[in-house]
Image 1 (cartoon, rainbow over the protein chains, first blue to last red):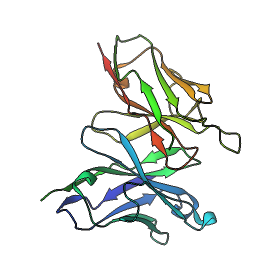
Image 2 (cartoon, helix red, strand yellow):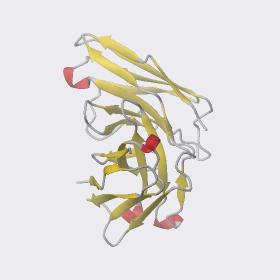
Image 3 (tube, rainbow over the protein chains, first blue to last red):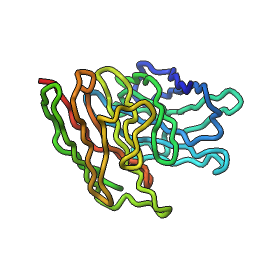
Amino acid sequence: EVKLAVHGGGLVEPGSSLRLSCVASGFTLGDYYMEWVRQAPGKGLEWIAATRNRAKDYSAEYSVSVNGRFTISRDVSQNILYLHMNNLKTEDTGIYYCARDVGGIDDYWGQGVMVTVSS
Amino acid sequence: DVVMTQTPVSMSVSLGGQVSISCRSSQSLVHNNGNTYLSWYIQKPSQSPQLLIYKVSNRFSGISDRFSGSGSGTDFTLKISRVEPDDLGVYYCGQGTQYPLTFGSGTKLEIK
């Protein structure tokens, strides 16, 4: 059974850093594209980052809103996907989901964690 | 970037009824490989999004045949027949044809 468990959310001040983890089970992380999608309070879904699979050298794509501040990575030995977030802004507040991407299709999603950026 | 426009923003339907949700993209979603990466998701209250339909008209594993997708190019539709209480939530279309991946703004389905 495919499962994605997201950890690491919390309350942080503007300008600080945070790392989210997405623990994958039921499949081999290195074989799949993976994504992070976020949702601001009361708003819709916003794709923010993706990493391709092993065959594509785990290359990454970022939205304009996070490019240069966020880094997506993975530890394939532990089957964990990460999102490293630096220089956090108040507008980064929201629920963060990881999702498995099968050819542009997000077939499984993690449960999401809340990140609140506030002074 | 591909802009995804969903209508209506919200709708109310009686149990057993039928609804249609429209999704239009600002560019064709036909990929170079010939596939059209248009998906539909439902986000039930306080839950993560769940995949319903992928590549326009393919139901994901375990999804009822009450859900059907259609369309091509830039114009797509999700139809839900014989609406049940568990269908309430927000429906999103999303495109996976090109980066940045983008979603529609959502359609909230309420049960009368």
